[in-house]
Length: 288
Image (tube, rainbow, N blue to C red; front, side, top):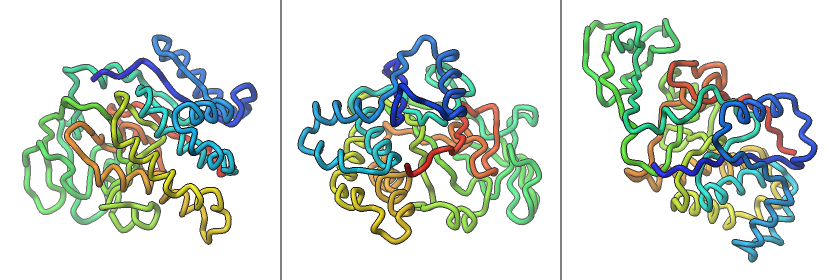
């Protein structure tokens, strides 16, 4: 993968960051990613980039009053234009992604202390939330012990492959029943793809398509507070719901979507921290 060593972050005013969690996450990026260029964009920077590349949308974008919408729109554009890593400021790096980008990297669904085995609890409560599931999540596994409950599986390992974009499921039904997920998330095709952490080479079409999807709905986003349950409209338009639809409708062998423990550890109190976890999202964002 040709991932530029750039990390893109956004906020309203980069000279006045007061949220302590954001400050802690930013300091961790500076400490852990001292070999990367770390760029913080505020509203003024975003307007300048829009004016340079898509001036026809600048006047409309300046009418957006909700910061989360502006940040959503910009992340798709900047990762398309420049590639690298996009991260929300409340996303805490746990370990460096260089291991993830190494050609020899392999990940396992199972617990290395169990010889890379995992258990499937078709009925009943999951015993170990790190390595147990309600169904077989692994397409490269074998049955070790086929009992009624649990079924013991062995993960044989997975490579990232020859891809240009690495994404992560926000939350699918790996660790919780699907009906629980659908009550909490706006899913598409049974999944939700996280968009607070994006890793990609530049000029990948899925991000341009998502940016253009936002532009096609820009009037709705400008007048969003007139909508009933407008936060769901945001999620389904420029947020993870809208992004999931664009990704799932444009999947190719150049896009790798990782299990949710990679970029979403700790989310909703259900996604576990595992040896595969690279980022933790603190969910401090607001609509302002």
